[in-house]
Length: 304
Ligand SMILES: CC(C)(COP(=O)(O)OP(=O)(O)OC[C@H]1O[C@@H](n2cnc3c(N)ncnc32)[C@H](O)[C@@H]1OP(=O)(O)O)[C@@H](O)C(=O)NCCC(=O)NCCS
Image (cartoon, rainbow, N blue to C red; front, top):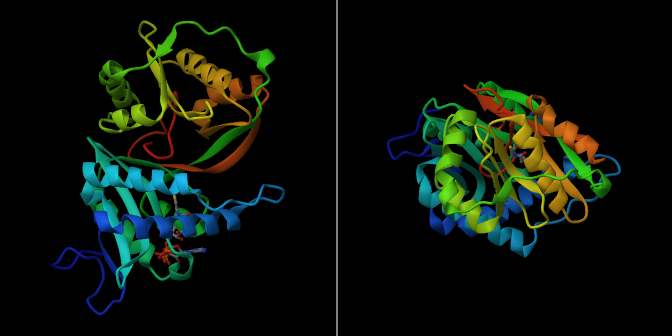
């Protein structure tokens, strides 16, 4: 679908307007996102898995903060569907150099299946303007249908969960805490692995996450760790560095941990997880278009 003269997607008679997101939409979009993903998590919950929890107040605040950042850096990639001023759908994407990524995408359950998702996807793909693209996809049948029809390859993702058996932890040397001066070589490594640096996403992550780096000669790498020590995003020039960085993450994990977004191109991560006695599960897809699934690389769900 092409935008009309005012840049909106959808007919004038249509009560649903697909339009660029504005700062004032953030709270309404967050509410729509919390409801949409809670319902989707309930639908895809496996037998025996814990009941999905509503998003916490801290989670809502982080969502709004992250979307405000996306709106500031690349507003033209951020779209909402609104009915009488209330957000009923959203598609937040970003261009970073030659790479496009989809940060989040959803339509409220009682508005799904009416073509709103297609209109939002048309808008963000127009913004991509043919760039190679990457994002982490749920298993929602409407989502996967949309993505494959848009030319994305769906690489099944594994995750690994459990409590690390600390007796398996090897002695890892040559790592140190990362800092702002590391971001330039990290962007170069990103370009080698995924065609574009994270650019402004790195300082954002550095503010909110712990960064551990390796400057091993000829095989640099980095990992961002979440507040429970879990690996959130990992990139390395060589599987040996990637393994060291993942072991460091597992060593700093507190309680149950999670290693996410593991594609089959990253079996080095499966081997580390199994050695640490984590369990392998399967979750969603890494969707890529115009590029291979990166390796050695564990994509971050938010910044890819
Ligand atoms: C994915 C999502 C945004 C799509 O929005 P939507 O408004 O329902 O999308 P559309 O109505 O444009 O439909 C998308 C396509 O999938 C199909 N579809 C929609 N819901 C479906 C379902 N439950 N089962 C099977 N197919 C479905 C539609 O028929 C349509 O295909 P078509 O255009 O070839 O007929 C929405 O379903 C959603 O929010 N899902 C839950 C959250 C989620 O998983 N988001 C994706 C994150 S990666």
